[in-house]
Image (cartoon, rainbow, N blue to C red; front, side):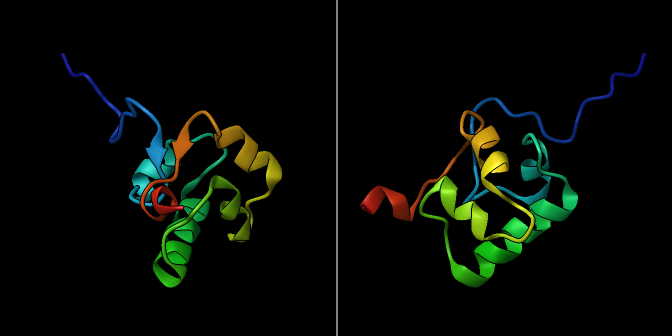
Length: 81
């Protein structure tokens, strides 16, 4: 018997400041291309302070961000504000 499991199983909200491309792909509305753009943006500009800041990533708009609100969090710098 072979049991196939996804490479990543989310047990809670995904932290967009720490997540890998594979982890981000588990989020609704985020495919491999957007996940790679999120990671690239984060590496170039630093950590996200709010989920709304994801809209600065090419291809991510208000509707996508709204769909992430219960599945994703932003940690790190936002805790200091």
